[in-house]
Image (cartoon, rainbow, N blue to C red; front, side, top):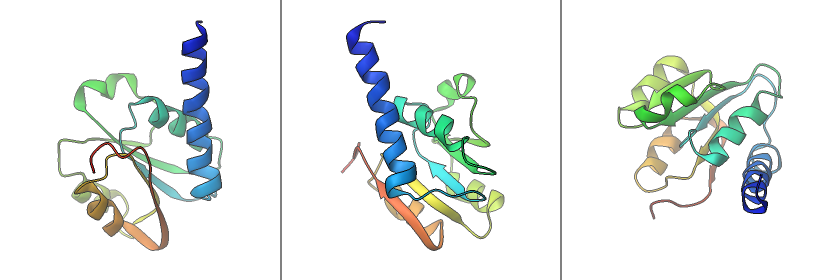
Length: 127
């Protein structure tokens, strides 16, 4: 592995760890929505979330990435109306949203939160 690849992998996991545990305060029996779960940080989040007991992980990703994503409880095509799909899965809402998309998706994700849920914006793909 090149030094560049090693640094990239390490940084994905450092960011994912901070998002889940330092900022997101993930605990067992919670539900997490992760946008762009097919990316480097998203994949690291998916793997690290599985280290906590009984976490439901909902991920959004482009359809062409679905085959390579395995550590997600529910995988949703980001091009579809994922809000309605998530409401079917979690009628009471989700505990934590990790959003690197921003833009109009911020309001969608915010409205999916349970009371006292946490919404974490990072990366800011679209501002």
